[in-house]
Length: 473
Image (tube, rainbow, N blue to C red; front, side):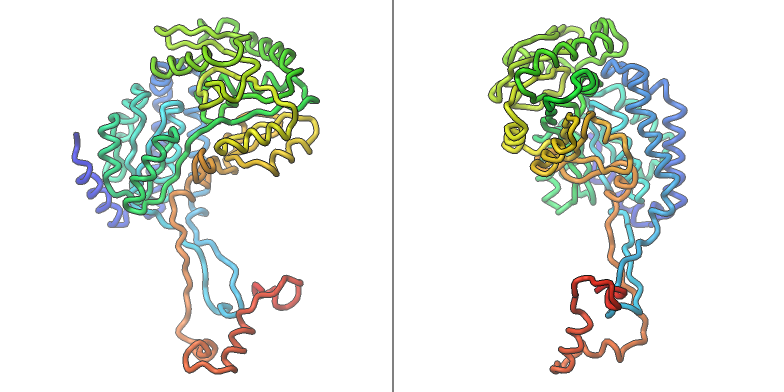
Protein backbone atom coordinates (compact mmCIF):
# COMPACT_ATOMS: atom_id res chain seq x y z
CA UNK A 1 0.00 0.00 0.00
CA UNK A 2 1.30 3.47 -0.89
CA UNK A 3 2.43 5.97 1.73
CA UNK A 4 -0.57 8.28 1.75
CA UNK A 5 0.99 10.58 4.34
CA UNK A 6 3.79 11.50 1.95
CA UNK A 7 1.35 11.89 -0.93
CA UNK A 8 -0.85 14.28 1.05
CA UNK A 9 2.16 16.19 2.38
CA UNK A 10 3.22 16.69 -1.22
CA UNK A 11 -0.23 17.91 -2.23
CA UNK A 12 -0.34 20.31 0.71
CA UNK A 13 3.09 21.63 -0.20
CA UNK A 14 1.91 22.30 -3.75
CA UNK A 15 -1.27 23.93 -2.48
CA UNK A 16 0.68 26.19 -0.14
CA UNK A 17 2.77 27.35 -3.08
CA UNK A 18 -0.37 29.08 -4.36
CA UNK A 19 -0.29 27.55 -7.84
CA UNK A 20 -3.85 26.19 -7.67
CA UNK A 21 -5.38 29.52 -6.69
CA UNK A 22 -4.90 31.23 -10.04
CA UNK A 23 -7.65 31.37 -12.61
CA UNK A 24 -5.19 30.19 -15.25
CA UNK A 25 -4.36 26.96 -13.42
CA UNK A 26 -8.00 26.19 -12.72
CA UNK A 27 -9.01 26.86 -16.32
CA UNK A 28 -6.21 24.64 -17.63
CA UNK A 29 -7.39 21.72 -15.48
CA UNK A 30 -10.99 22.16 -16.58
CA UNK A 31 -9.84 22.25 -20.21
CA UNK A 32 -7.97 19.02 -19.53
CA UNK A 33 -11.03 17.35 -18.06
CA UNK A 34 -13.11 18.43 -21.04
CA UNK A 35 -10.57 16.80 -23.37
CA UNK A 36 -10.59 13.68 -21.20
CA UNK A 37 -14.35 13.33 -21.58
CA UNK A 38 -14.46 14.16 -25.29
CA UNK A 39 -11.46 12.12 -26.41
CA UNK A 40 -12.38 9.01 -24.43
CA UNK A 41 -16.15 8.72 -24.82
CA UNK A 42 -16.05 5.21 -26.26
CA UNK A 43 -13.58 3.97 -23.68
CA UNK A 44 -15.63 5.36 -20.79
CA UNK A 45 -18.86 3.97 -22.27
CA UNK A 46 -17.24 0.54 -22.55
CA UNK A 47 -16.18 0.68 -18.90
CA UNK A 48 -19.73 1.54 -17.87
CA UNK A 49 -20.99 -1.34 -20.01
CA UNK A 50 -18.63 -3.75 -18.27
CA UNK A 51 -19.50 -2.55 -14.78
CA UNK A 52 -23.28 -2.07 -15.04
CA UNK A 53 -24.35 -3.08 -18.56
CA UNK A 54 -25.18 0.59 -19.20
CA UNK A 55 -26.58 1.39 -22.60
CA UNK A 56 -24.84 3.91 -24.83
CA UNK A 57 -27.68 6.36 -24.14
CA UNK A 58 -27.44 6.07 -20.35
CA UNK A 59 -23.65 6.31 -20.54
CA UNK A 60 -23.92 9.49 -22.59
CA UNK A 61 -26.89 11.27 -21.00
CA UNK A 62 -26.50 10.36 -17.33
CA UNK A 63 -22.71 10.11 -17.16
CA UNK A 64 -20.46 11.66 -19.81
CA UNK A 65 -22.64 14.51 -21.11
CA UNK A 66 -24.01 15.21 -17.64
CA UNK A 67 -20.44 15.91 -16.53
CA UNK A 68 -19.59 17.76 -19.73
CA UNK A 69 -22.53 20.13 -19.39
CA UNK A 70 -21.72 20.87 -15.76
CA UNK A 71 -18.11 21.41 -16.75
CA UNK A 72 -19.03 23.87 -19.52
CA UNK A 73 -21.26 25.75 -17.08
CA UNK A 74 -18.33 26.02 -14.68
CA UNK A 75 -15.87 27.11 -17.37
CA UNK A 76 -18.25 29.77 -18.67
CA UNK A 77 -18.82 31.28 -15.24
CA UNK A 78 -15.66 30.61 -13.24
CA UNK A 79 -14.26 34.14 -13.48
CA UNK A 80 -17.47 35.59 -12.08
CA UNK A 81 -17.70 32.94 -9.36
CA UNK A 82 -14.17 33.77 -8.22
CA UNK A 83 -14.92 37.47 -7.79
CA UNK A 84 -15.44 38.85 -4.27
CA UNK A 85 -19.10 38.98 -3.29
CA UNK A 86 -20.15 42.40 -2.04
CA UNK A 87 -22.32 42.53 1.07
CA UNK A 88 -24.64 45.10 2.62
CA UNK A 89 -23.16 47.52 5.13
CA UNK A 90 -24.57 49.46 8.05
CA UNK A 91 -24.04 53.10 8.95
CA UNK A 92 -21.08 52.22 11.15
CA UNK A 93 -19.26 50.68 8.15
CA UNK A 94 -20.37 53.07 5.47
CA UNK A 95 -16.78 54.08 4.64
CA UNK A 96 -15.44 50.51 4.72
CA UNK A 97 -15.14 47.83 2.06
CA UNK A 98 -16.83 44.55 3.00
CA UNK A 99 -17.05 41.38 0.95
CA UNK A 100 -16.94 37.59 0.96
CA UNK A 101 -13.84 36.04 -0.58
CA UNK A 102 -14.31 32.43 -1.71
CA UNK A 103 -11.11 30.52 -1.03
CA UNK A 104 -10.10 26.88 -1.53
CA UNK A 105 -9.92 24.72 1.57
CA UNK A 106 -6.67 23.00 0.64
CA UNK A 107 -6.46 19.26 0.00
CA UNK A 108 -9.84 17.64 -0.64
CA UNK A 109 -10.74 13.95 -0.59
CA UNK A 110 -13.47 12.91 -3.04
CA UNK A 111 -14.91 9.43 -2.57
CA UNK A 112 -17.06 8.32 -5.49
CA UNK A 113 -19.83 5.74 -5.74
CA UNK A 114 -20.28 2.77 -8.07
CA UNK A 115 -23.80 3.39 -9.37
CA UNK A 116 -22.89 6.42 -11.51
CA UNK A 117 -19.11 5.99 -11.42
CA UNK A 118 -18.36 8.86 -13.80
CA UNK A 119 -20.99 11.44 -12.91
CA UNK A 120 -20.83 11.06 -9.13
CA UNK A 121 -17.04 10.85 -9.13
CA UNK A 122 -16.09 13.49 -11.69
CA UNK A 123 -18.53 16.27 -10.72
CA UNK A 124 -17.11 16.82 -7.21
CA UNK A 125 -13.57 16.71 -8.61
CA UNK A 126 -14.49 19.42 -11.12
CA UNK A 127 -15.90 21.60 -8.35
CA UNK A 128 -12.91 21.05 -6.09
CA UNK A 129 -10.49 22.00 -8.87
CA UNK A 130 -12.59 24.99 -9.93
CA UNK A 131 -12.44 26.21 -6.34
CA UNK A 132 -8.64 25.90 -6.37
CA UNK A 133 -8.10 22.79 -4.26
CA UNK A 134 -5.72 19.90 -4.63
CA UNK A 135 -7.64 16.62 -4.84
CA UNK A 136 -7.31 12.99 -3.89
CA UNK A 137 -9.89 10.94 -5.79
CA UNK A 138 -10.97 7.53 -4.49
CA UNK A 139 -13.29 5.86 -7.04
CA UNK A 140 -15.47 2.97 -5.93
CA UNK A 141 -13.71 -0.36 -6.33
CA UNK A 142 -17.06 -2.02 -7.14
CA UNK A 143 -17.14 -0.29 -10.54
CA UNK A 144 -13.70 -1.72 -11.28
CA UNK A 145 -13.50 -1.03 -15.02
CA UNK A 146 -14.46 2.62 -14.68
CA UNK A 147 -12.15 3.10 -11.68
CA UNK A 148 -9.25 1.72 -13.71
CA UNK A 149 -10.06 4.08 -16.59
CA UNK A 150 -10.07 7.10 -14.25
CA UNK A 151 -6.78 5.99 -12.71
CA UNK A 152 -5.26 5.74 -16.18
CA UNK A 153 -6.66 8.92 -17.75
CA UNK A 154 -6.64 11.56 -15.02
CA UNK A 155 -2.81 11.75 -14.75
CA UNK A 156 -2.64 12.22 -18.53
CA UNK A 157 -5.03 15.16 -18.63
CA UNK A 158 -4.71 16.89 -15.25
CA UNK A 159 -1.82 18.26 -13.18
CA UNK A 160 -0.41 15.15 -11.52
CA UNK A 161 1.22 17.24 -8.80
CA UNK A 162 -2.21 18.47 -7.68
CA UNK A 163 -4.65 15.66 -8.48
CA UNK A 164 -4.10 12.06 -7.38
CA UNK A 165 -6.17 8.91 -7.91
CA UNK A 166 -6.17 6.12 -5.33
CA UNK A 167 -7.73 2.81 -6.32
CA UNK A 168 -8.43 0.02 -3.88
CA UNK A 169 -10.94 -1.31 -1.38
CA UNK A 170 -11.57 -1.09 2.34
CA UNK A 171 -7.87 -1.13 3.42
CA UNK A 172 -7.02 1.81 1.15
CA UNK A 173 -10.11 3.74 2.20
CA UNK A 174 -9.39 3.11 5.88
CA UNK A 175 -5.81 4.30 5.46
CA UNK A 176 -6.90 7.45 3.63
CA UNK A 177 -9.40 8.33 6.36
CA UNK A 178 -6.61 8.32 8.94
CA UNK A 179 -4.99 11.24 7.13
CA UNK A 180 -5.79 14.90 7.60
CA UNK A 181 -7.77 16.43 4.76
CA UNK A 182 -9.19 19.94 4.51
CA UNK A 183 -12.48 18.76 3.00
CA UNK A 184 -14.12 15.38 2.44
CA UNK A 185 -16.85 14.75 -0.14
CA UNK A 186 -18.43 11.30 0.09
CA UNK A 187 -21.19 9.65 -1.93
CA UNK A 188 -22.54 6.30 -0.77
CA UNK A 189 -24.59 4.61 1.90
CA UNK A 190 -25.49 5.92 5.34
CA UNK A 191 -23.49 3.33 7.28
CA UNK A 192 -20.22 4.33 5.61
CA UNK A 193 -21.28 7.98 5.80
CA UNK A 194 -21.22 7.71 9.58
CA UNK A 195 -17.72 6.23 9.43
CA UNK A 196 -16.61 9.12 7.21
CA UNK A 197 -18.05 11.67 9.61
CA UNK A 198 -16.34 10.08 12.61
CA UNK A 199 -13.01 10.16 10.79
CA UNK A 200 -13.56 13.78 9.77
CA UNK A 201 -14.36 14.73 13.36
CA UNK A 202 -10.82 13.76 14.41
CA UNK A 203 -9.51 16.83 12.56
CA UNK A 204 -12.75 18.87 12.49
CA UNK A 205 -12.75 18.44 8.73
CA UNK A 206 -15.88 19.76 6.98
CA UNK A 207 -17.79 17.20 4.93
CA UNK A 208 -20.43 16.81 2.28
CA UNK A 209 -22.29 13.52 2.58
CA UNK A 210 -24.41 12.48 -0.39
CA UNK A 211 -26.28 9.48 0.97
CA UNK A 212 -29.64 7.95 0.07
CA UNK A 213 -32.77 6.70 1.71
CA UNK A 214 -36.28 5.71 0.75
CA UNK A 215 -37.58 8.38 -1.64
CA UNK A 216 -41.39 8.10 -1.53
CA UNK A 217 -44.00 8.56 -4.23
CA UNK A 218 -47.53 9.61 -3.30
CA UNK A 219 -50.24 9.25 -5.94
CA UNK A 220 -53.39 11.29 -5.41
CA UNK A 221 -56.70 9.67 -6.38
CA UNK A 222 -57.32 12.24 -9.12
CA UNK A 223 -53.98 11.67 -10.85
CA UNK A 224 -53.56 10.57 -14.45
CA UNK A 225 -52.39 7.02 -13.72
CA UNK A 226 -50.98 6.49 -17.20
CA UNK A 227 -48.73 9.51 -16.73
CA UNK A 228 -47.84 8.44 -13.19
CA UNK A 229 -46.89 4.94 -14.29
CA UNK A 230 -44.72 6.13 -17.18
CA UNK A 231 -42.79 8.63 -15.08
CA UNK A 232 -42.43 6.46 -11.99
CA UNK A 233 -41.35 3.30 -13.83
CA UNK A 234 -38.86 5.33 -15.86
CA UNK A 235 -37.34 6.75 -12.68
CA UNK A 236 -37.33 3.36 -10.98
CA UNK A 237 -35.77 1.42 -13.87
CA UNK A 238 -33.04 3.81 -15.04
CA UNK A 239 -29.77 2.08 -14.10
CA UNK A 240 -31.89 -0.88 -12.87
CA UNK A 241 -33.06 1.15 -9.91
CA UNK A 242 -29.52 1.78 -8.65
CA UNK A 243 -30.03 5.53 -8.34
CA UNK A 244 -29.96 7.31 -5.00
CA UNK A 245 -33.03 9.37 -5.94
CA UNK A 246 -34.95 6.58 -7.65
CA UNK A 247 -38.59 6.42 -6.53
CA UNK A 248 -38.28 3.85 -3.76
CA UNK A 249 -41.92 3.01 -3.07
CA UNK A 250 -45.43 4.19 -3.95
CA UNK A 251 -48.26 5.12 -1.59
CA UNK A 252 -51.80 5.39 -2.90
CA UNK A 253 -55.32 4.39 -1.95
CA UNK A 254 -55.97 0.66 -2.23
CA UNK A 255 -58.56 1.10 -4.95
CA UNK A 256 -55.90 2.67 -7.22
CA UNK A 257 -53.50 -0.28 -7.03
CA UNK A 258 -54.97 -2.48 -9.75
CA UNK A 259 -55.25 0.28 -12.34
CA UNK A 260 -51.79 1.63 -11.46
CA UNK A 261 -50.28 -1.84 -11.90
CA UNK A 262 -51.96 -2.17 -15.31
CA UNK A 263 -50.44 1.13 -16.40
CA UNK A 264 -47.03 0.18 -14.98
CA UNK A 265 -47.08 -3.04 -17.00
CA UNK A 266 -47.88 -1.10 -20.18
CA UNK A 267 -45.00 1.29 -19.54
CA UNK A 268 -42.51 -1.48 -18.72
CA UNK A 269 -43.52 -3.48 -21.79
CA UNK A 270 -43.00 -0.37 -23.92
CA UNK A 271 -39.62 0.54 -22.41
CA UNK A 272 -38.19 -2.98 -22.13
CA UNK A 273 -40.16 -5.52 -24.25
CA UNK A 274 -37.67 -8.25 -23.29
CA UNK A 275 -35.59 -6.78 -20.45
CA UNK A 276 -33.36 -9.85 -20.04
CA UNK A 277 -32.11 -9.37 -23.61
CA UNK A 278 -32.46 -5.59 -23.81
CA UNK A 279 -29.33 -3.54 -24.44
CA UNK A 280 -31.07 -0.68 -22.64
CA UNK A 281 -31.58 -2.45 -19.32
CA UNK A 282 -28.80 -2.39 -16.73
CA UNK A 283 -27.58 -5.11 -14.39
CA UNK A 284 -27.08 -5.22 -10.64
CA UNK A 285 -23.50 -4.30 -9.71
CA UNK A 286 -22.56 -7.63 -8.08
CA UNK A 287 -23.89 -10.90 -6.66
CA UNK A 288 -24.05 -9.61 -3.09
CA UNK A 289 -26.38 -6.77 -4.04
CA UNK A 290 -28.37 -9.09 -6.30
CA UNK A 291 -29.00 -11.50 -3.42
CA UNK A 292 -30.02 -8.60 -1.18
CA UNK A 293 -32.62 -7.44 -3.73
CA UNK A 294 -33.79 -11.04 -4.21
CA UNK A 295 -34.52 -11.37 -0.49
CA UNK A 296 -36.50 -8.12 -0.54
CA UNK A 297 -38.71 -9.52 -3.30
CA UNK A 298 -39.22 -12.88 -1.60
CA UNK A 299 -40.18 -11.48 1.77
CA UNK A 300 -42.51 -8.64 0.81
CA UNK A 301 -45.98 -8.04 -0.57
CA UNK A 302 -47.30 -9.78 -3.67
CA UNK A 303 -45.36 -9.99 -6.93
CA UNK A 304 -47.66 -8.77 -9.72
CA UNK A 305 -45.04 -7.87 -12.32
CA UNK A 306 -41.63 -9.49 -12.82
CA UNK A 307 -39.85 -11.05 -9.88
CA UNK A 308 -37.34 -13.00 -11.99
CA UNK A 309 -33.73 -13.17 -10.77
CA UNK A 310 -30.82 -14.66 -12.74
CA UNK A 311 -27.83 -14.84 -10.44
CA UNK A 312 -25.19 -15.62 -13.05
CA UNK A 313 -26.29 -12.66 -15.14
CA UNK A 314 -26.75 -10.27 -12.19
CA UNK A 315 -30.24 -9.71 -13.60
CA UNK A 316 -33.39 -8.70 -11.76
CA UNK A 317 -36.44 -8.13 -13.93
CA UNK A 318 -38.55 -4.98 -13.57
CA UNK A 319 -40.70 -5.89 -10.58
CA UNK A 320 -43.81 -4.45 -8.95
CA UNK A 321 -45.12 -5.57 -5.56
CA UNK A 322 -48.58 -4.75 -4.23
CA UNK A 323 -50.19 -4.73 -0.79
CA UNK A 324 -46.87 -4.09 0.92
CA UNK A 325 -46.86 -3.38 4.64
CA UNK A 326 -44.64 -1.06 6.64
CA UNK A 327 -43.04 -4.10 8.29
CA UNK A 328 -42.10 -5.84 5.02
CA UNK A 329 -38.34 -6.08 4.34
CA UNK A 330 -38.74 -4.03 1.16
CA UNK A 331 -40.15 -1.17 3.23
CA UNK A 332 -37.45 -1.34 5.90
CA UNK A 333 -34.42 -0.41 3.79
CA UNK A 334 -33.56 1.43 0.60
CA UNK A 335 -34.40 -0.88 -2.31
CA UNK A 336 -31.65 0.25 -4.71
CA UNK A 337 -32.87 -2.11 -7.39
CA UNK A 338 -35.63 -2.45 -10.03
CA UNK A 339 -38.33 -3.33 -7.50
CA UNK A 340 -41.30 -1.01 -6.93
CA UNK A 341 -43.37 -1.71 -3.80
CA UNK A 342 -46.87 -0.25 -3.56
CA UNK A 343 -48.16 0.34 -0.03
CA UNK A 344 -51.84 1.27 0.31
CA UNK A 345 -52.74 4.24 2.53
CA UNK A 346 -56.09 5.81 3.31
CA UNK A 347 -55.14 9.46 2.86
CA UNK A 348 -52.42 12.01 2.21
CA UNK A 349 -52.26 12.59 5.96
CA UNK A 350 -51.49 8.91 6.57
CA UNK A 351 -48.76 9.04 3.92
CA UNK A 352 -47.25 12.14 5.52
CA UNK A 353 -47.29 10.48 8.92
CA UNK A 354 -45.52 7.41 7.52
CA UNK A 355 -42.85 9.52 5.84
CA UNK A 356 -42.22 11.52 9.00
CA UNK A 357 -41.73 8.38 11.09
CA UNK A 358 -38.68 7.45 9.01
CA UNK A 359 -35.43 9.16 8.07
CA UNK A 360 -35.69 12.24 5.90
CA UNK A 361 -35.49 11.03 2.28
CA UNK A 362 -33.18 12.30 -0.43
CA UNK A 363 -36.14 13.04 -2.71
CA UNK A 364 -39.93 13.07 -2.63
CA UNK A 365 -42.35 12.73 -5.54
CA UNK A 366 -45.99 13.82 -5.41
CA UNK A 367 -48.45 13.19 -8.24
CA UNK A 368 -51.72 15.13 -8.24
CA UNK A 369 -53.74 17.48 -10.42
CA UNK A 370 -54.36 19.80 -7.48
CA UNK A 371 -51.26 21.74 -6.42
CA UNK A 372 -52.67 21.98 -2.90
CA UNK A 373 -51.91 18.27 -2.46
CA UNK A 374 -48.24 18.85 -3.25
CA UNK A 375 -48.18 21.90 -1.01
CA UNK A 376 -49.47 19.80 1.89
CA UNK A 377 -46.48 17.46 1.56
CA UNK A 378 -44.10 20.36 1.02
CA UNK A 379 -45.29 22.08 4.19
CA UNK A 380 -45.43 19.01 6.43
CA UNK A 381 -42.42 16.89 5.47
CA UNK A 382 -38.68 17.31 4.88
CA UNK A 383 -36.53 15.90 2.08
CA UNK A 384 -33.41 16.73 0.11
CA UNK A 385 -35.37 17.41 -3.08
CA UNK A 386 -39.06 17.63 -3.99
CA UNK A 387 -40.67 17.06 -7.39
CA UNK A 388 -44.32 17.57 -8.31
CA UNK A 389 -45.67 15.31 -11.07
CA UNK A 390 -42.38 13.71 -12.09
CA UNK A 391 -39.38 11.84 -10.71
CA UNK A 392 -35.64 12.60 -10.58
CA UNK A 393 -35.70 15.57 -12.96
CA UNK A 394 -34.59 18.07 -10.32
CA UNK A 395 -31.13 16.50 -10.40
CA UNK A 396 -30.61 17.70 -13.96
CA UNK A 397 -31.21 21.37 -13.15
CA UNK A 398 -27.80 22.85 -12.32
CA UNK A 399 -29.29 25.90 -10.63
CA UNK A 400 -30.77 23.66 -7.91
CA UNK A 401 -28.42 22.30 -5.23
CA UNK A 402 -28.54 18.51 -5.15
CA UNK A 403 -28.22 16.95 -1.71
CA UNK A 404 -29.87 15.42 1.31
CA UNK A 405 -30.97 16.31 4.80
CA UNK A 406 -30.72 14.33 8.01
CA UNK A 407 -30.29 10.64 7.24
CA UNK A 408 -30.01 11.31 3.50
CA UNK A 409 -26.95 13.49 3.87
CA UNK A 410 -25.72 17.05 4.20
CA UNK A 411 -24.51 19.66 1.76
CA UNK A 412 -25.35 20.12 -1.91
CA UNK A 413 -23.70 20.35 -5.30
CA UNK A 414 -24.13 20.70 -9.11
CA UNK A 415 -23.16 23.77 -11.09
CA UNK A 416 -22.21 26.77 -8.94
CA UNK A 417 -23.18 24.84 -5.83
CA UNK A 418 -20.29 22.38 -6.37
CA UNK A 419 -17.80 25.23 -6.65
CA UNK A 420 -19.32 26.86 -3.58
CA UNK A 421 -19.17 23.61 -1.59
CA UNK A 422 -15.40 23.43 -1.99
CA UNK A 423 -14.88 27.09 -1.03
CA UNK A 424 -14.40 28.60 2.39
CA UNK A 425 -16.40 31.80 2.55
CA UNK A 426 -13.91 34.25 4.09
CA UNK A 427 -15.36 37.42 5.58
CA UNK A 428 -13.28 40.47 4.70
CA UNK A 429 -13.54 44.02 6.06
CA UNK A 430 -11.14 46.68 4.79
CA UNK A 431 -10.85 49.92 6.74
CA UNK A 432 -8.82 53.01 5.90
CA UNK A 433 -6.37 54.69 8.25
CA UNK A 434 -8.58 57.76 8.51
CA UNK A 435 -11.94 58.19 10.21
CA UNK A 436 -10.63 57.68 13.71
CA UNK A 437 -12.80 60.44 15.11
CA UNK A 438 -15.94 58.63 14.00
CA UNK A 439 -15.05 55.32 15.64
CA UNK A 440 -13.39 56.70 18.76
CA UNK A 441 -16.64 56.24 20.67
CA UNK A 442 -15.84 52.52 21.01
CA UNK A 443 -12.81 53.20 23.20
CA UNK A 444 -12.88 53.43 27.02
CA UNK A 445 -13.61 55.22 29.21
CA UNK A 446 -17.28 54.58 28.45
CA UNK A 447 -19.82 57.34 28.99
CA UNK A 448 -23.57 57.68 28.67
CA UNK A 449 -23.05 59.90 25.64
CA UNK A 450 -20.91 57.23 23.93
CA UNK A 451 -23.47 54.56 24.76
CA UNK A 452 -26.27 56.67 23.33
CA UNK A 453 -24.33 57.33 20.13
CA UNK A 454 -23.37 53.66 19.68
CA UNK A 455 -26.96 52.64 20.29
CA UNK A 456 -28.17 55.03 17.61
CA UNK A 457 -25.54 53.89 15.10
CA UNK A 458 -26.07 50.16 15.56
CA UNK A 459 -29.76 49.80 16.38
CA UNK A 460 -31.77 47.80 13.86
CA UNK A 461 -35.34 48.83 13.10
CA UNK A 462 -38.09 47.22 11.01
CA UNK A 463 -37.78 48.25 7.38
CA UNK A 464 -40.07 51.12 6.49
CA UNK A 465 -38.49 52.36 3.29
CA UNK A 466 -37.23 55.48 5.03
CA UNK A 467 -33.77 57.02 5.12
CA UNK A 468 -32.31 54.49 7.57
CA UNK A 469 -33.17 51.60 5.23
CA UNK A 470 -30.59 52.98 2.80
CA UNK A 471 -27.89 52.14 5.33
CA UNK A 472 -28.99 48.56 5.99
CA UNK A 473 -31.27 49.32 8.96
